[in-house]
Image (cartoon, rainbow over all chains, first blue to last red; front, side, top):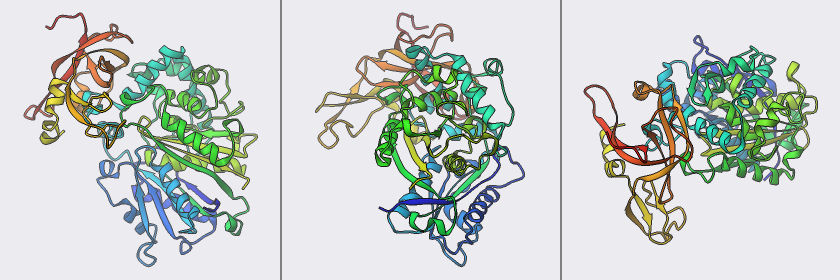
Length: 390
Length: 134
């Protein structure tokens, strides 16, 4: 295994982009990443793209070929292109596959991308497509919606640890605050706790403002062997660890409904690989598909003890100026959640922060950051640790 | 869900029939053909659950996909069966009635239908343990 660096990043605006197609989105993100790495395309050896459900959202499979074709890398260069899928963790998995390809020595320059176009179908279809991240036959068929499953995590978390709806709301308030400083975010508006607490109930205790939105968007990253990274950029960011773990697909089969054991294991393996502990992480982008998911994430990643996620959020520990800023981009909640793109966008945000290029939302001390991407209710979890030091 | 996909598990859906591993004694619902504890050493047999259990956690769903939208709000829960396994199912009771730890038992109910002319799905729901069947 050899060290891997990131030499280029790109990301589209996130939001409801009626005027832009699936291919428009990934071509923009990919071109931006190549520009950032100052490469033309011939240098690339392979492409990995995270996409959850183009089949349901735009009636298109064979996404790997489509992307490499419209990126202009198929007709003459015949570059290998692979679509990877792990529901909402598809982007994180694409990044991991690209990392493994470079680390193994098999490829040198590799692009990891993620894309999702979710607004070409009506909302009911989108809700149903997202429910396919859970167990269709034994959860979805019984009437479980995706918010419904996370609501059951929230209900038990409140029961066991005394977590309150106000604490959940604080996650949304904080992430909207961060997104207001992110020009690419879907929601750039600040919200108050009372707005969250008075919004429509989706699945008790989760309200509409506890949920991440339906989003179009794409993101891309260029990876290279660490020893040649400085040929392309003055600000390489190194991948200190890449880890992936699994758990049962159905929430009801878990050891503990309020703990994502896939996150616990992916984090443990990642810290071990990087030779650090959670206390060494300066900032993180975590998978807040619902407000409760961020509370669970900061616990399961080891930033706080189990059950303390609610109170520390209320006290400001996870704010931009807190002890460990969480979701400086605005997270899935406010920056938006184009499912296949999210895992790659999380890394784009951390890399921008480590390079000191995050503008108004720049975290003061940002030398080592973490990304945490979850598929479904925790059937898959992927953790990356990124650092300015090799 | 298509007809064959539903039909394959009719026994499990109607009668709460799962599996039990004779090697380790663990029970599984939904049925599993490989025991996650014993894997190749497992001996899987059919097992019919008693249908009694308690609520581990719950939600009240107010916004659902097309097939369930007419039923909202409905109570959805994770139930721990007496024999050990946990499953997801609807509890027939009011949103204010449901609570963690509530004892429930299974009943045979209509779950939904595809379209007016489509197939009707039946399966298992739960009711509070002391309640009479209506």
